[in-house]
Amino acid sequence: MVAEVGLTVTHRRYVPYTHAHYAGNLVDGAYSLAAFGDVATELCIRTDGDEGLFASYSDVQFRAPVRAGDVIEITATLVRVGRRSREMEFEVRVVGRGAPARGESAADVVEPPLVATTARGVVVVPGPA
Picture 1 (cartoon, rainbow, N blue to C red):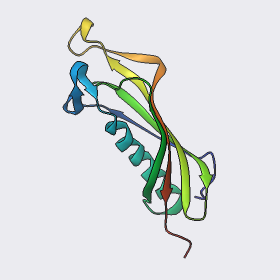
Picture 2: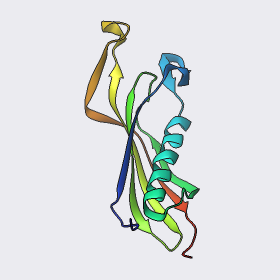
Picture 3: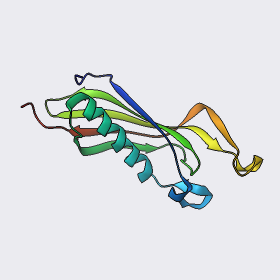
Picture 4: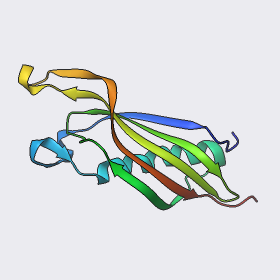
């Protein structure tokens, strides 16, 4: 596959309670950044056949809480292609959330999804052979 602007990679995952870091089962912001690294890695594998290395994040915004028990969707979209760099926009959306008031294992689909974290990042990949 060729690195083309607009290419998107999306992962979904359940946020385990072992990642709760603060009162109210809040998860720290580093959880979203690690998830961004995972989707960026897949995007680089698809475009360059290499995992790439993160060079920087910019404009990181924590817009809503991520909680243990959430189901999140993490997206990376390629927005700029350089000779060895790939700039991406990232978004974490909460698509499911526990509803403990209704029962210990109750949960709801979050519709529309709640945008929790956004960022831009640059990844570098090996140059052409």
